[in-house]
Length: 422
Image (cartoon, rainbow, N blue to C red):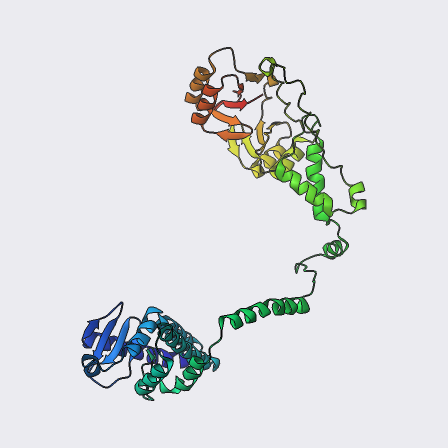
C-alpha cells in the first residue's frame, strides 16, 4: 500500500509540473525557459524550466539575483537528485531516514545555489534581504527547487561562515595523519582461508609450505621438462614462472622429496674475436624434437594441461577425445612438435610417422619462388615459434634469402614452413 500511495503521489506531482509547462507561456532565457504563471507563486525550478509570476516578470520586479539563483539550480541539474530520492522513497517508503535525507539534499541544493550567486560578486547582506522578500512558507512543488522560508536561517548561517584558504589547507593536511592513525589502529593481519579449505591447506598456509595440490602440479611440470635433454631443453616462460613460484612455496623437506628443478644450460658467451666472418659460419643444426619418456597416454594427459593442439589423422580434435582414443587403442602412434614460444602440437595416427628426414631443408632453388608455390597450396608459416601471415613470411624471405627454412610436408592438408635466423 505504501508503494502504491507514494507512486500515485509522485505521478500526480510530475503531471502537475508538466501541465504547467504545456499550458503557460514560455520566455527563452540563457540555457533556461521561463514559464510564466498567472497565479502568485514563489520562484522554483524543474530541470531547465523556471516557474515565475507573470506580472512580476513582465514588470521586471524579480531581481536578477533571484533569477540567477534559480538558473544555477537548472545548470547544476539539481532536479536529477530530487527525482532520484523521490523514486527511492517510493520503494523504501517505510524508512524514516529517507525523509531526513531528502530534506538534507534540498538544503544542500540551496547552499550550492547561494554559493554560486555570492561567487559572482553579489553583496551578501543585499542578497539575504532579497531571499527574505521572496521566501514563503507556502508549499511548493515537491519535485522542484524553490526559495523556502524554513531553510533561510541555516542558509544565512552558512553564508556568514567563511573559512580562509589557509585554514582549509591546514584542515586537509591534518586529515592525512588522522586517517593513517585510524587505519593502523583498527587494522589487523588476518589469515584468510576459503570456506571449503581442507585442514592440510590451512596448516600449509600457516607453516608457509606448498599444499599437496601445488606439489602435484610442480612435480608434473618438472617431470615433463626434466624428461627433455638438458642440451635442447626449452622451458616456456609461463611454466618457468609457475615453477619458480611453486618452488619458493615449498619447504626444505618438500624440495628434497620432490623432482629436481628443471634447469637450462645458459647460452655460451659471445666470441671475443670480432674479425671472424660470421657469414661463412654454417648454421647449427636444428634442435631435436623432444621425446618424452612417458607412456603415450601419460604424455597426452600431461600435454592436455599445457593447452596443446591435438590432431588425429591430420584433423583437429579435443584433448578429451585424444585421451579416449589412446585408452581405446594403445597401439596408436603419437608425435609431439614443440615450439619456443607457443603451445605444443600433438599428432596421433594409426600409421607410423615418417622419419625425421621428412622435416627437410629447402632444396637449392629460388627460396622466394618456392615459398610462393607452397603458399598457393595453403602452407602455414612459423617464425620463432609463432604463426605469421603468408605475406609477412614472403616479405621476410625477400629481404633475407639466407634465412634457414624448414618444411614439414607430412600433413595431408597443408605444408608447415618454419623460418629461423640460424
